[in-house]
Each structure stands twice: as C-alpha cells, then as structure tokens.
Amino acid sequence: MNLFHSVTGLVCLLILGLFPFVCIAIRPVNSHRLFGFTEAPDYRNGAACPVTEQAETMSYCDPSLVHVAMTLDSEYLRGSMAAVHSVLRHASCPEHVFFHFISAEFDPESNPRVLIRLVKSIFPSLNFQVYVFREDSVLSLISSSIRIALENPLNYARNYLGDILDPCVNRVIYLDSDVILVDDVHKLWNVQLTGSRVIGAPEYCHANFTKYFTDSFWSDPIFPRVFGSRNPCYFNTGVMVMDLEKWREGNYRMKIESWMKLQKRTRIYELGSLPPFLLVFGGNVEPIDHKWNQHGLGGDNVKGSCRSLHPGPVSLLHWSGKGKPWVRLDEKKPCPLDYLWEPYDLYKPISRTK
Image 1 (spheres, rainbow, N blue to C red):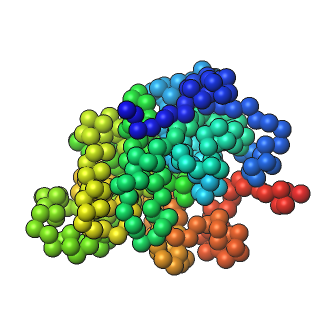
Image 2: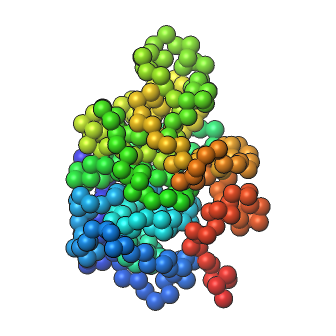
Image 3: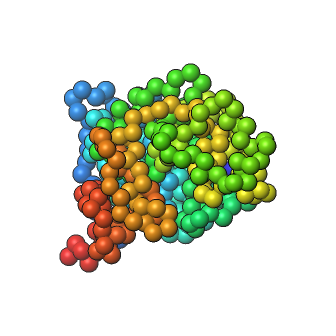
C-alpha cells in the first residue's frame, strides 16, 4: 500500500479537467483578494534559455527542468509563496523551474484543491504539482521536541520525497518555507554530488556536533559507532540537493525511520526532524558553499532573538529558528534582516489594498 496519495494527474483531470503534468487551475475573478495574496509578476525565460513546451503539455519528466520541493500548509503559506517568488525573480530560466508542493492531509485550510487554485492565482504560469502527505504514516514515529512547531508531521515530508515524487524525478532541491533566494537557483541545481553521496548541503564543522544528541546517546557503547570513521559535521536540512535515485536505491527513508523508532524508546536527541538526518548522513555530505544557507535568522528555538548574517557572500537567507519575518513585520517588531524578506512578500490583505 502506498503511504501517499498524489494529488497530481487525478486531481487535475477529475477536478480541474486539465493536463496531469502541470497542476493548473482556472483563476476566478478577484481570487487573489479572496486569499489575501496579490499576483506575482510573470517571470519568463531569457533568450539564452532552451525553448520550452507550453505549460499545458510540459512533463515534469523533462530532463531540462530544475525540480524544487517544498511543503505547503496554512501556517507557513505566506513564507512559501515568498520563497517561490524569490526563486522565480532570480532564476535565469524561470520557466524551467518545476515546483513540487507537499501538503498536509489533515489541514482543513489548505486542502489540495484550495492550494492549486491559490498557487495558480498568485503564479498563473507556474509549473507545479501538489501532493498529499499522509501524516498518519509518520505520526507514530514523532517524539516530543523543544519547540512544538518542530513536531509538525509536515516537517518530516522531506524523508519521503523518494516515495512521493515520480520515479522519473531523480534529483530535487528541497527548500524550507522560510527561505529567500537572492541568486540563480540553477547554480545550486548544478552542484555535483560526488562518489556515493546522496545529499549536498552547506556544512558547519565549527559547530559543536555533540550538542545535537543527548548524554545518553554519547555514553552508550554502541550508538556513537554509527559514525564509524566519518567526521560528522552539522548541516541544516532546510536546504538540500538530493539524489533521489540513490536515495531510493539505498532505502534511506527506512534508515531514518529506524533512528526515529529508537528515539521513541530511548531519547537520544531533543530537536525534531534534523538529528536522524545527521545520524544517517553526517560526515558523508557533499559540501556546498555556505552562501547557499545563511541560516539561523529566526533566532534560537526558544526566544527567537535577532541574528546577523554570517561573514561572506549570500545566495540564500534562511529564517530557521523560532522567529519568522512575516510574524515580526506584522507585529511591527521586525529584526533588521526581516526587511530583506519583505520585498518578496505577496500577502496583501484587503484592508491593505484598499
């Protein structure tokens, strides 16, 4: 039995009567007002880009596409739309970017039909597809975390991308909903995963890796041996290039789930979906330039205090941590860097557009 129901061709055909490969919906009059979002500019390919098929006939199996996977839910929807906007604005060939949106099964405010209409109303020419994530498939594996938001089942959808996406999609960029790109996503897509490496991400080897696991983990005679001769470094799972072909072949979903099951029996970490990734991939990650994940801008996981940028160039800003820029801006208590997020915000409630 499949763990997921893909709201792709079936929903598009039966509900919307359109083609299965690009989930598009007819935008009703003033739907952007209904949902509180304005329509984004229509970003088109430049002269140097390959000639594309019409959106109605483009297949997500097209090898020229850049695949980006993100989650969509009612709480972080505003951030997700800003992230998509930033990707398109800075992409050299925006029509060659295909978005795979994973939605929660039990989120009444963001069911697939609503999401398809909403995304299409904001980005009329976007190439995208919406899937439903079966939250009950992971609920029994989730343990309590230091912040309740980290216990959201949708945080674990990245573990199942190899099952959710079509087998013809053998590579994907996973992005969290609280990121902004200020560089061309094609550059990130072109990162090569060498040897047997399954994922690529910026590594932070100066971070204290031991703090991501409990004392009981490190004092156990067996658990630390998982790293063997590897030299594990911290990496943030909010920005990853993933080889889904190797992921499926290596059954990495099951490996991650095994650690989650152990966590339920013996508490070996305090954070949510990150530590299992560290256990499986720590020390075997393709290192990507740090500019592709200027993370931690949301502050720590308790207070959400303001943070500054890391030294060096910036291609992607990531508001990981408790504080989110749209919340702080609405509360008129923004951090200085939140103003870098604001230009990509497409949420304009009726009261603000009159």
